[in-house]
Length: 146
Image 1 (cartoon, helix red, strand yellow):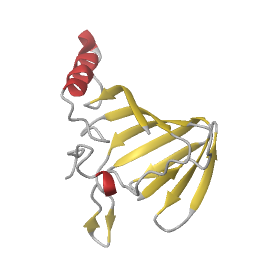
Image 2 (tube, one colour):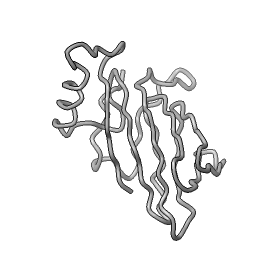
Image 3 (tube, helix red, strand yellow):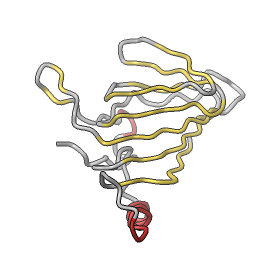
């Protein structure tokens, strides 16, 4: 799996005067502290999934839009429900625990995601926090817990 982050925002509404948004993005990327979510902002991320790759089950404190650009990928929810997404399909994740699997043994899959920081989802009065599964410790925490 490979990540690419062409842009982030850190405030809303975005301040584009004097290229403030670009300077803030460049500073955030240079810090090497960007988690999956950017607190108070957005992340535009391309993810390339190798043939047969399956991500860890994970949850972010964010509203995510995922669009399949190339190939086909399987979305797996912690309920056991699965959905196959094809080129051009869009998936919206609302703080759900999920994983991704490339079912092909030959083709790579490319998905573009836009992640927007959000307030936590509450279940029975308790907030659901970011959960990175087996990648905890490998990826920086997003730092957007409230």
